[in-house]
Amino acid sequence: MSTAAAVQYVLPAVLITRADLARLMREIEALDNELEAQKVRNHASGKASGYHLPTMSRSLNDFLEQNHIDIADDKIRVALRETLKDTKEHAPIMHMTFAVEADPEFLQRLVGWLRQEIHPQALLSVGLQPALVGGVYVRTPNHVHDFSIRSLLEDKRDIIRHELEGLV
Amino acid sequence: MTIWWLAFILASLAAVCAGFVWIIIVLNRLQSGGGKKALGDLNKAYSDIAEEDATHLFNKEFREELRNRGRLRFEKIIDENAMFLKQDLDMTISQLNDYMKKEISAKLDGEFAAYAKAMQEAQELALGSLQKTAQEVEEQRQGLAQAMQQYVADRESAMLKVYEDNMAKIVEHYVLLALGDQFDLKAQLPYIIHQMEQNKQNIMEDMRL
Image (cartoon, rainbow over all chains, first blue to last red; front, side, top):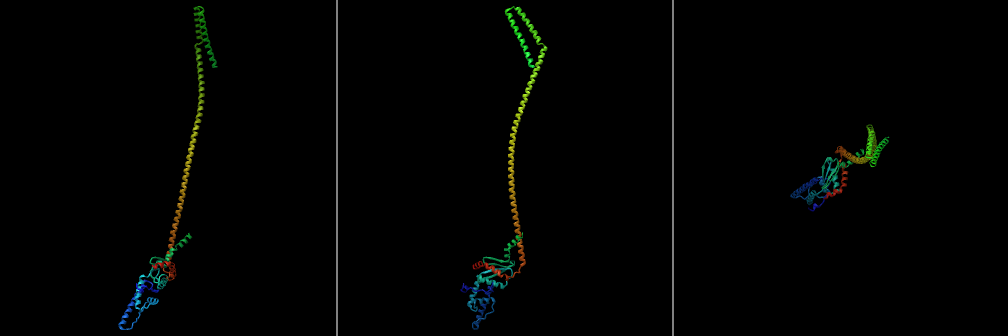
């Protein structure tokens, strides 16, 4: 692993899933290609060195901003690509299944808490299961935590039984 | 009365015999002291007299009378003996009856006592058997009653549990259908974070593996 790969970048809240990270990596790769192309063109035309940064996505902007990265630096871009590749392969992923479709804002708040409290580079894998009614069904690499309303209702059946026994 | 007759007869016989004895003695004196002829005549005379007297004394009527008297006497004796025999027999029969009664009574008493004892033993045995049977029946009844009560209680409990389970499922199903997707996910965020906070340590250890 390279020296850059050992650097732990802060992942912005908009980077929620592994797909988001892969998209970020593709964008960085495309940006790298674009900047390399500009470098070649500048060299061919004899212009002074300097890049015209294309429009970047919000996730890339937030990532660069939060990690104070100068994307115009060739070495940093190479290191960044390596690091992100390593992060993508080794970042812990938590699978969370909800009863309804989770909106990005909700997921960002959730992943923010997750990276703050659990692991700074944790990623989410989001699923949908309407039978859960509410809450979340969490699956970590080795455990399952059922925080769903369905599970809560099942656990609270004793209350109904107790009430029924009181009636009988 | 009969004795007197008998004494009379015996006296007559004794007198006759005494006469014969006296005649013989006289004849002996005559033979030893007088003439044989006179003695012979005298003997002949005495013989005739004796024969005449004997004939006169034991004539047919007298013999008949004696026979009748003897018959009557014999009958009387037989009657008396029969009466005595009858009395003895009656007495013996009476004693025998008493003896038999006593023996039979004793025997019967003994048999009755043995029978009563046997009956009592049989009764006690039967009573004991009945009591034992009754006790066993009672024990079986109690066991059966307990088993039935236990069965009823278990059955009731099982039915109640099934009812409660089903009721809980019905209520739960109702809640699930009623709520459906009406839950606001954002509103659930504090609950989710709270739950994850509670299991934070486990999640952290698992995520760092």
